[in-house]
Length: 428
Image 1 (cartoon, rainbow, N blue to C red):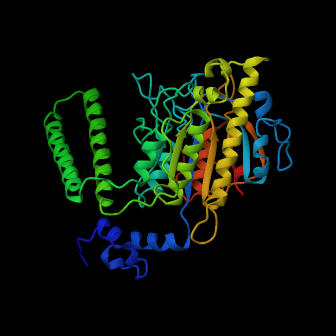
Image 2 (cartoon, helix red, strand yellow):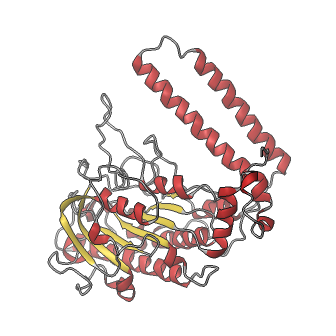
């Protein structure tokens, strides 16, 4: 049976369709089952929290010989003591192609080789959050959300932690107030004007695409490759326009928190961003989130008058003490985020924590070291082993952890980045 019903019609009638049969003959196989699933089984989510420069190796990493569930919690991780059975610390992982000691996030979620494209000195690949978005983001208003900060020390190239399927940077939202309005504020423009704006954007894209196709013949291979990349960019914009169109008549969720105060920096900025992350997950506005966190402003908010770079090159004395205080602040904030995820209830009575996978870490371990990437994993959304200290074989690809996580979330990919297999020790 043929029908012109599409996703917009379904979204407009979601409330009624939940109670109806699947209506597969009308093309609603995926969307009807998805709507029914929302009512019975909460969706899986993934959150990645990335710091720039690394941590204090002497006081943050557990002793490599002290593994298992009975490991001794370190000074740097001590604020997480109340959640010890609900997170795991993973050691031994590295992105084998990393070679920039000040790039704490550029390749953290991709595992890419920056020299993989001949003639280019900087190439990247898709980040793990965007893989999650491709598989779990079809039924949310935002396929993913990339959060950032104006403070970028230690992170390296990129606009956030996220990189799209072409290895291009995904822009990040660095203002908590703007993020709040993006999530929860209604569009002031009338529906007809918003529809017209999308139609105009499509018209412009069509014209640009037609012009580009006219010059396609007779190009060199290099120019053909550039044009192919250009066409992919156009397709990406078309995909976003389609997403906007699908959700035009669906009201945004009611904000479960108040609008943030403007101008928050450092520790206060991170704390409110964590509130907004929980709010975005609670309202199912997205299921894939990244946050590239500030470094310098965090130190300033802790009344530490040293630069983030100098702290990353700590030695015994003032700089090392500042590094340790920064670590404690991150662990305190992370413990508070886990509290909120546990306290937020789903429709079936379970907690948000039960369906979310939360990762905290960096591509830099400490000082200029690019091996043993600090990795904390919490949340039960991927069925991973929690409450453990795992010391993997030295230089295990960090992407093996990402691959294990993806497969645990039911995303059937066979590899990610430079992965060589899953981490069996991480599977529950």
